[in-house]
Image (tube, rainbow, N blue to C red; front, top):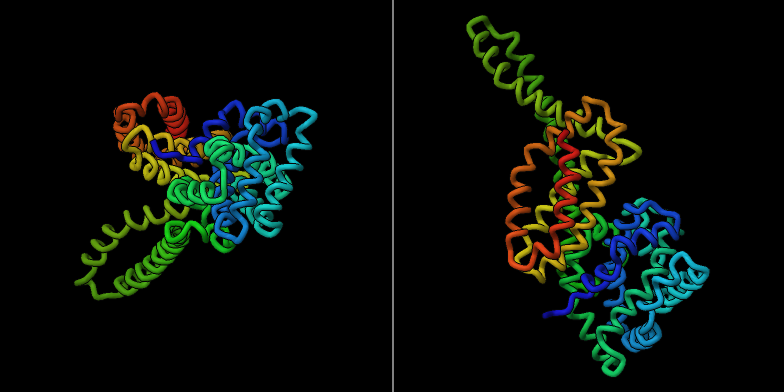
Length: 363
């Protein structure tokens, strides 16, 4: 079976381990999970770039050899007296590989994406660096660990890395150069995220333009001769439902922001990403690769669930009106994926949790 470094690393970072990391750093568990879901492919993307630089592959070999025992000792050091040393050495390791500029850019993008400060995301990267390099070293084995082998391994991971990069996070990294080594697939992912934002803006403008044109038309029809009065009434009656729908859309966008989080956008983006991820699952291998993204969506929906108590009954109704129509097709996708041989054992706990969290939004 083909190696997938993202999946191997995320298998090590179990929910319990993520909880311990969050507690050790004094961070929210969901934010930490979101940050890790972005940081792991982000780090691997950066290392792919290092491998293409003169002498970079050999640096990676030496770093991987130094971290051969990291996976075995990591759990003992989290939350212990050795934690500060772990973070410091991990940060120094990243600085030697990525350079200070790229390390800072990666930490800043993770912080913005997951709602963490620069310092917290930097500490998290320091913790994750030994895990990433330890996994690479473990996969290669100390005897076969050389510059050519590690370059080949990282080159083979580009598609897996691009697939694991959250769309919003890829957009944040778009101008840093950290994704350049991944080639056209990464540029396509970044462009898609930007295009989505542009389409959303254009749609909002179109709604506004339509409203203004409708207002002008109704005003003109109002002054027509009595013979056209019936036509004016008919136009008014047919246009009113569209006007109400547009107004409801505007109200939903403006009224579902709580604690700085645009809940409406978060939910629709999360469900869109969920559909895409589920559609890409065709066997046990692709299910394993999809697990980090499913966990990320779960964390995003869970964050929204935690804010439901701050919504008014009217806002809850609007949110339910967005999610309810989508649930039948989502449940069909869930069932279709779980019916694939070997997938239920990997994904059923995560999918069951997702169903429950999405159901809360429909109440």
